Length: 229
Image (cartoon, rainbow, N blue to C red; front, side, top):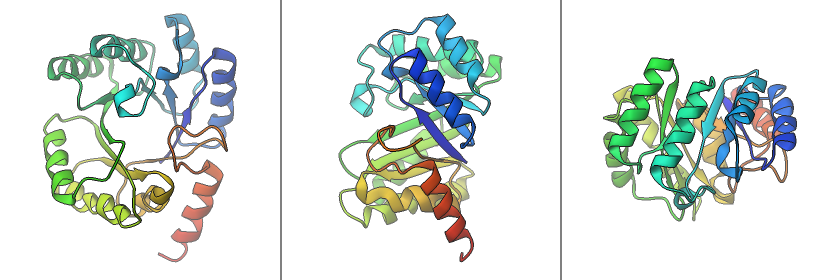
């Protein structure tokens, strides 16, 4: 599954990006942290405009996003997204456990799914540390676990991709890859070793993270690699 992020800061741009994403992606991520203010009516319009499964994310500044408010407000944004029809919401593992549990419960009632995420924005931890992190995150019983690191050397791709063996053994739906220009290989290859999804942009200037390639390039690479693997 290729997820395309919508990274607009106002409704007209966001709706235009959603319209374009509907034509090329498998799912759409609405980056709600990009908005300085977004009313419930506007949120409802955005979610309704998604013709593909909709993931709502309100990424904190400490994990590479733009939201600088407290955890409880961020979780309330995600609850509002679920209320208005989001198929998935992304909550960070560093969120207070009580708030995570309350969101899981609300999502279950509304039949939405939760992606539990962790972003290491400066480096790729050793594999032993990543495996321990996966095990801790697995115990939350989220629908999907997402672990993203920053590649500072090409071999970091091998480290992050090695997590998929553990995920397969433990039956965890996993999104895992490296950010940064050196992390592009893991973004592309994760599909072929069990990745639940990867991310690709609508085009240049619309990336939600460094190293994100366009959806057109991602599909081209998947087609070419699929023919030889």
